[in-house]
Image (cartoon, rainbow, N blue to C red):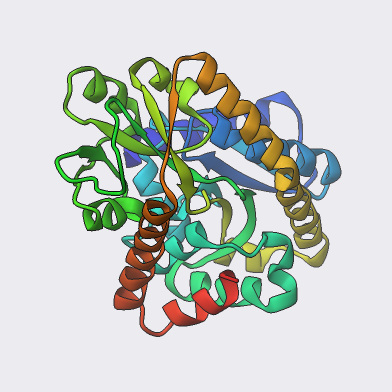
Length: 323
């Protein structure tokens, strides 16, 4: 991975320096996304980069090295930020919980990111992320977006017994609490796993299925959704501390602008559900009793794990992030 990334960095740096001279005072930040360029989960980050590069001409620029496994494995992105191999990354906290178990708290937040400055959440997050990950949580690229359980065969209640599901750490405990067997499968391998019957379903944000053609292997979506999909922009703390006030302000204002891109998400998700219906994905609506069981298991399984791994910060994060 280090050899691959070094090659990408050298090539990208050569390309930038060969195109045009850069102002000696301009700081250039090297950035990657955990997802391929143009992927739904990279799009707001790419809009952020464009805004910074427009607003920060002659002051600060972002050199986008690309995204996905061709640059580095997604689960290595957190460590690359921590060690300064890269300066900035678009990544979900679910991909670096091995370094920062508190990161899962962002995926169960219910208080909008626009309120984080008012209630002290952003300051506390930066303290924890700085101490544990050597990173500043610059802004949230994806917010107010639920996960759903997608299946090849129907269920009649909240019991997931006898189901084999693809999962990631954030909802592994939830699925296991309800009786499922959970397998770790890379996103790019999920289509084949469904096709071959290795798994019966998977957890996934409400959007993004069509990027991997998962709708072709999906028959049902379970309602309600759960959690709050999180993708955030991290910047290495050492690099941030070297920036001047003007550079920090440009990055901060662009990050707040990026966060506001999520304010109209509710309508977007409704359109996505219509698209799924047109592709043949049916809805399984849980009863009121099953819904309560389902959502309680989702919330408590995550927070019990966060508090177990981080008794110091877990309760405080829940206080700041959940209504």
